[in-house]
Structure formats: structure tokens, C-alpha cells
Length: 210
Image: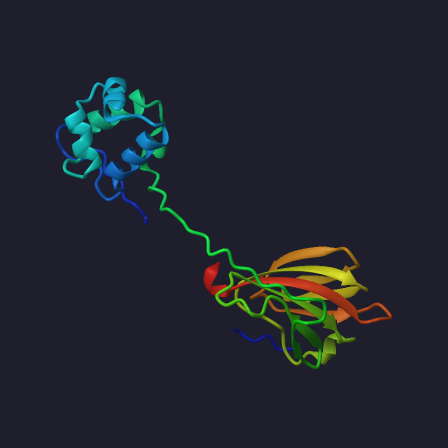
């Protein structure tokens, strides 16, 4: 068978009056830490020995803190340097989406070797693609080429037994209840070995998201 193909944030540590770091939005991060601990500017001032006016200017990006100021911040606030440079978390809103697929009501995609039933097919812009598959193939020779697609795949055997062929490994027998996770741009193919056609559940990631 012939196989087919298918912030950074830069840190600059200096001494004296030179800026310690600007690209990391240090002021925004400092304010986030302060509010998360329910501290006022006066509280932070007492902890660090820095004037409230200085702290206010840092939080509003009106000044860039020197190395000595950063040292006072991490010591007074009892945090590690990486914590101060972790990018501020953006507020996230859930869309609360859901998509129910009743038994046997998925979107069918039959092929000569597989009979796919796409689950959650009405939900657009998913990060994962779940589907149930009846493995019709009974021989590796039934595949004209490797199955491959971008991303990663989780596979679990729901009924029957299969032989999993992959491009870089020896064939692997999988029985009911077994599961495997693999890079799906690696050539792969499933063959039923049980008397009845095997049924598997697969969940693939979208290739542009991994």
C-alpha cells in the first residue's frame, strides 16, 4: 500500500533607571494580583514600601518599573517572579452550547470500509469531532491508501474486535473496552476481526487547533 500525504514575551532585566520590562503589561498584571487579594493601593504600598502614586502609575502604564521596584513588588507581595510576569487573564464568557444526538440519529457517512455516524453534527466550530463507526473492512487490502487527517484521535472499541494498522507500528489487536490515542496524520486503518462488524467510538481534534 502506498502512503499519501495529506507571545513569546521577551524579558529584559536591567539595572538603574532603565525599564525592567514593558511588553508584558506588568501594570495590568499587578492590578490583577492586587484586586484578586482584595488589596487597596495603600495595602500594597505598606507591603512593598512603594508610594501609592508610584503603584498607581505602574498599574496605569504611566511608568515602567525598574529592577529594584520589581524586587520590592515580589518580596512585599510574597510572589515569585514568574507570577508577576504571567500574562493577565482575560475574562471569558461561556456560550453554553450543547448538541444532543439521539441514538441512531447522527449524520451518516458510509464508505466502502467504514460506516460513520457523525455525532453532535449540528454544532458548528467544534474543537472536537465525535463519531461512531461500524468497521466494515475485513482485510487490510481493502484500503487503497492509508487513512490520515490532521490532528489527533481517541478511539474506543464499543463492540467486537479490531486490528489497528498504523504506519509506524506493528498491527495491534483491540478488543471491546480497549482504547487508544494517536496522531491521526500518521497513516492508519481499522479492520474488523470479530464475527460481527466492530463498532468504535472516535473523537478527533480539528487539525487547526492542535
